[in-house]
Amino acid sequence: MSGLKLFRYVAWAAVAVLACVAGALVYFQTTANENSGALIKPLAAIGGPFELVSGTGETVTDKTFAGKPTVMFFGFTYCPDVCPTTLSELQGWMAELGPDAEKLNYAFVSVDPERDTPDVMRDYVWAFDKRITPLTGSKEQVDAMLKAYRVYAKRVPLDDGDYTMDHSAAVYLMNENNEFVGTIAYGEAEETALAKLKRLIKNTAASS
Ligand code: NI
Image (cartoon, rainbow, N blue to C red; front, side, top):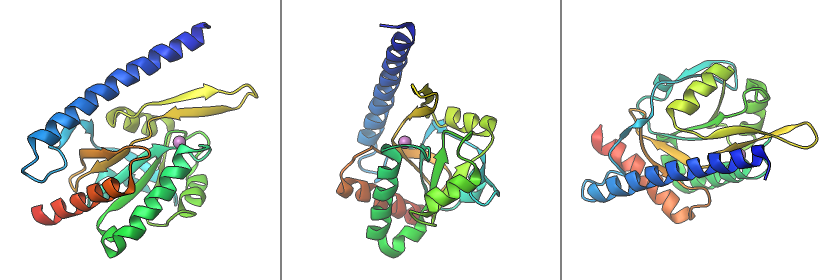
């Protein structure tokens, strides 16, 4: 096993441990809140303010999304599989929600700002749905957001000199105050994903 390979195994093991801790926390909080109807109690440890750039070059911050819950996930336009799958699943959920889809914000955040310029992001994301906000920015802006949102992303060199990105695949559910309240896992059944989105909408209506 090469040093790099070993490093990647160790890094993945660390990610797995973190994922388990987060999972346990989410499970515990979900259980604790069964009667309140909340997805989970907002977790302050994940999320926070951010400043990024939209597909049309405008500055977008957490304030831009205030007042509506936000469905956001992280990826990159060169992603061969996970990102296009998630985007097309999101399309399906939005179609199922019908008019209620307007009660949520949607954002796709690049973990690869070097290649994902605002133009590239706009063309890619809007091919799926123009209601999804493409977000990228400087490396510093993106790194700050990934850190605050506990998103794993790592550049992996390819044999041909190119590179790809390993990244977390979960869809984040943020409430109307941009507080983290849950996730939809990659490949989660449409029925449970939709139930979570409906709950997110309903909780907002109940608290406003
Ligand atoms: Ni991806």
